[in-house]
Amino acid sequence: MLSNLRLSRLRYLTPFLLLAGCAMRDPPAPRPPAIWAADGRLVPPDTVLRLPDGTRVPTRIWPARGRVRAVMLALHGFDDSRDAWEFAAPALVAQGITLYAPDLRGFGGMADRGLWAGTDQMVADARNEALQIARRHPGVPLYLMGESMGGAILTCLMARPDAPPVAGTILLAPAVWKLGAVPETVLRLLAATAPDWRLTGHELPVHVVAGDDMAAMRRLYFDPLTLRASRMRAVAGLAALMRQAAEAAPRLHGPTMVIYGGHDQLVPPPAMAALWRNLPPGTRRDYIPQGYHLLLRGRSRQAATADIAQWITDPDRPLPSGGDIAAAAWQALPHDGSDAPLPILAPLEALPGK
Image (cartoon, rainbow, N blue to C red; front, side, top):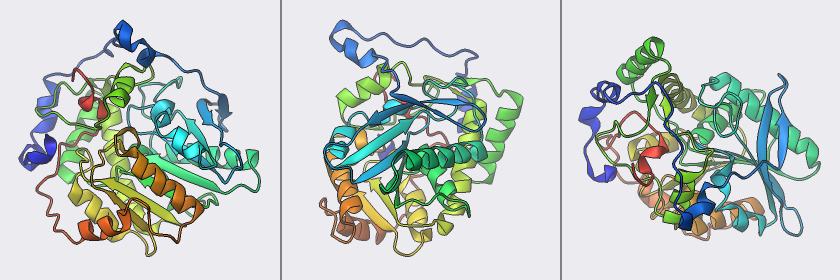
């Protein structure tokens, strides 16, 4: 388990270890056995959002049941897709929340799958998508929700002067932290010299667990939209995005809720503690002790979804999970940086067979 290892000594050696296992082609998608055939299904998008440059964005929609209390734009994490919300969506729609889940550029079913669009482009896309959804649902409160990389994108977006008018932003284990000058420089050099080399997760000298619900992890593994290799340029781009988000966090606009899990093995506690210290006054902090990095695809997702729904419908009440108290207790603990993980956030390390 990554959380039980002291990996900071590997921070500078890791990029060179990764090179030993790099490939030039994407690995084939695994075929599930018959008993799990449904985990390999391709779910077609419910709609296609069109961006100003003509880009078509496949998007899934989970409509609210009964009275619509809110509409939400949900951005997935690195190497993930629009299917990221399958396990949490039923609980949210039952609370009157309509969920829009687009693929991000370079991921899922996008035409540029596997490429890296850059922070500015991804932030601009999120803004345009939010405005489109708001126009589709006039008068309904609009919320933004981002997981991991998606959380970093929303952090950058909501720190900008042209941030869209939203009722609130929810950041799930956001990838908001600085790797440091040396690791970022090494990644930039590798991206410049070998931009299309692929990393699959097999190169890492440790095993990382992103979630504890095996049904959800199987679906992520066999989902044809999941990326199974990360190009070096995308890995370096992710590192730059995380740093930009860390620098932008103190300037976040509007009501914000940040949720973190006690078993997160991808965003280290020191990085989250630094983010929490730098957030604007009034930011809601929620700590789920049993939560893993993929908070809404773990066995504790009921606690996280209940907290999200209540923060939207009745933000002044204490969170039903007790996450307010848990967050205060966790933030009071020392987080000295000794548990910093490898400078790679690809969730595929956590999947079956990895």
